[in-house]
Image (cartoon, rainbow, N blue to C red; front, side, top):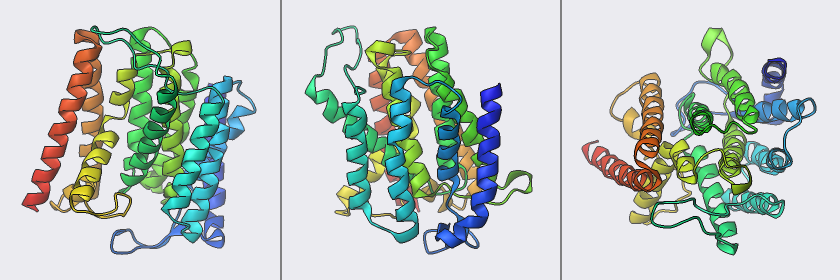
Length: 334
């Protein structure tokens, strides 16, 4: 409890302090055709959340791999802050994400195997595991960033993913190093109430720096908790932890490629945009998406624990195809 108090209090103080400093650092988000909020909003939510975790690391002894993830992700945060302020472009951001991923991989953390699936035993992926690690982490990092379009959405999805990590670990009977998940939930919840302006608090955004940094940390935590050396749960459950962000990234990439558009070029075709275009209020859209994410993660867990990993993997792919078809159907009706 003492460490949770530290991370919550430090994030509160940091958010209050940097909310006043943000305009001087040009870390504010202004409305445009894609952003319908009012006024200039500080882009320091992810920065303060990250700093609160680094501050906690001075008091709490995390494992080597978790410290490696936390401190390496500072590179993504730093370049993300520059991008939030100066718009440095997607190529530099992707390069930074690849370099940071390679630092963590070189430090000893990567996807080693995909688990056991009845018909075959786990086998070492070797060098292919390094490539798969980069692809998976970059996909989730940018998937969280892409879906960060309405108040509370990205942070809410990350919180649900972290709760899923805890729940899957609990039901597998392995809670090794799970404290990092609890601390992250606590500090992100602090930002969440600011982002939604609950209790009359001042609105604050994650910023691209925050969404990409938290997405990166989440991606490598999933790899950490499914690594053979400290496996809390089966690797297929890692995909279910982030099911909806993956589905949305898959659908938006397919649609953009189909229309011959750069997959990294922003548009209003994400699931939250499609629902908003159906004249649903932003708060209801938030509830719909977060509930959908939670239900998907629960379904994935039930399928795994009742039927097995292979059935869970097949179900994950089927739900992804259903999501893709539904998103195309919604677009045609708008």
